[in-house]
Amino acid sequence: MSSLRFVHAADLHLDAPFRGLSLDSAETGDKLRQATFIALQNLVDLCLRVRADFLLVAGDVYNQKDRSLRAQLRFRDALARLADHNVDAYVVHGNHDPTGTLSRAVRWPENTRVFESQEPECAAYVREEETLALIHGASHTRGGETRNLARKFRRSPEDVFQIGLLHANLGGNTGHEPYAPCDLQDLRAGGMDYWALGHVHSGGVRSRDPWAVYPGNIQGLSIAEPGSRGCYVVDVGRDRSVEAAFHPLHAVQWAVLEVDLRDLDTLDRLEEGVLEAVEAERERAGNCGLICRVVLCGRGPLHLRVSEEEGREELVQRLREQFSAAEPFVWIKDLVAESAPEIDLEARRGQKDLLGEVLAQAEELRNREDLLEFLHKEVLSDLFGHRRAKRFLQGLSREEADELLRRAELLCADRLESSDGE
Image (cartoon, rainbow, N blue to C red; front, top):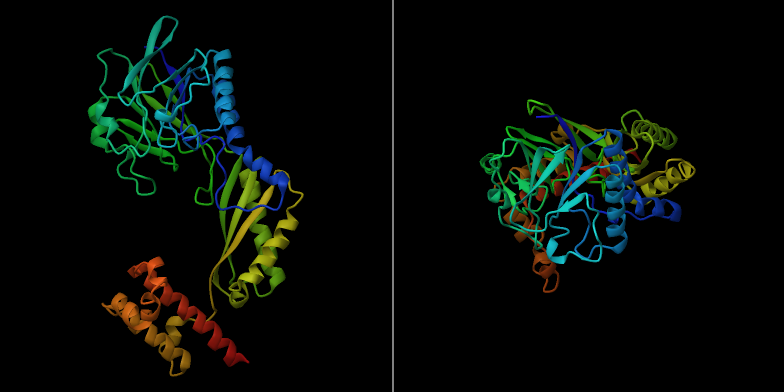
């Protein structure tokens, strides 16, 4: 057979809002609202630049069931641009845009095949009268699809390269809802050469036997989705060998940066350290907007100062002013304090003073097998027994209890050490 090249994308989430973000700048806010559409434009540009034969979109084209008219028209225009250059497109829908809510107000270009059924349908990619690939696709027809749609796929008898196009949760990925769950054995049973998957936003090759790939989303939507976001360009050789390469598409990049307080002994040095970290990330990000969370970590003399929320917020505002004229834009989302005092808690735990005694008692609590029961009955009984408050409370997990103890230790160390110094 002849070789072929296609682009595999998913989770476009067109017109999605950026979550957990408040902006003072109207101009920056407008750039964010355009981010998913710019990423879509970058996707089309890539298809044309690499001379792809076709584009695969594995679900969640839109961000919500009542998709915006703007999103539908922008997607149609993108596909029409591909059609003008003889690039076909194959699309399935996912949990965010099930076909049961599909609007018929938009007519798709002739180069586009939208699979609207939950039962896999097959479409052929033909070039110069030669069938080079069969694309099998199935869509979510309702929200919250819990059935294993992958089990419905079966290879056609034709001796050509065959692709499964599906929005699904492979292997119980716990970071995403278990919609259309499946496992690797289900994919193997389907007999496809390549599974073009969507739903999981952290992209990557999940299997090479058969090929099963998540491209991730084309634009990160929150601080929980840092780093590059994009798609895969897939080359299929004459012998049906597969090579898949990731290509970034995002218009805005999220980043989580760590700044160690160990060698920062003044507030101006802290500011310099944060600025250096952001500038370095800005250089790595290249020609796209940047939204940063800065995590202050390590042991240092400024721990007590950065633990105060009001002081961190003042520093955030000052940092935003420093980057107010940056192009592409830079936005400091927040500063998070995960630092510790300079003292060695383990060494102090055995000391015969007030702090040592407090730390020793905390360690005794941590080692109790009945810690959760003790906290509920002895420490937090008034709170959990309150007639109104208890309706809004859930029991602590062991991890949450350990974290509370850790924070209590740090707070005591801060307060007792500072009072000793005075």
